[in-house]
Length: 184
Image (cartoon, rainbow, N blue to C red; front, side, top):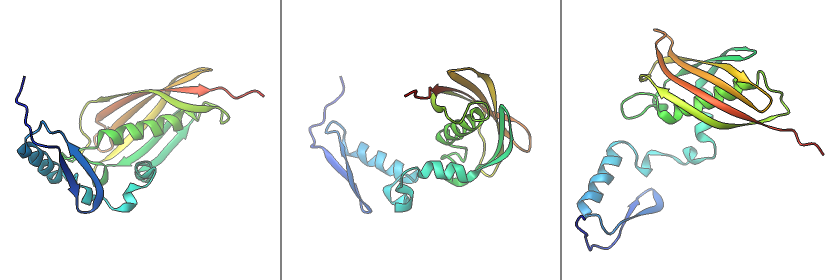
């Protein structure tokens, strides 16, 4: 069992944000300061975001603006995505969350080419394999294709490739479930 520190819980507040975080009383103050400094150094302080970035669906709007449709065919959708600083991580690679958001959007668009408009779709499963990093300022080609489509579900494969070299960087597989049309 480790040391237990008897200091009271600390409040961490930001000058620009009214919210605060409570830190466990079992952590020494120097650990709290080190973690806080690390997060600020990574650009994760509350002052890094303006109010316009705190709106509903901001992340979806950002992804949608960077994703450009190239080809739409029955069972296939191809898009081009620019890796800009807004969606890169500390190592200037594409964020994992952005990869998931792009894969979901392309999978739904691809499924819509074979599933009737009156059926609602929902994402039941999304698996992503990270093969390599997509560096900042690169353009990616994102190809989605239907693997299987039936009465109750559709499976989509999505490939992310660097446009210049055609190097495969991510693979995603999405299972979309169809909601039946209500019969009244």
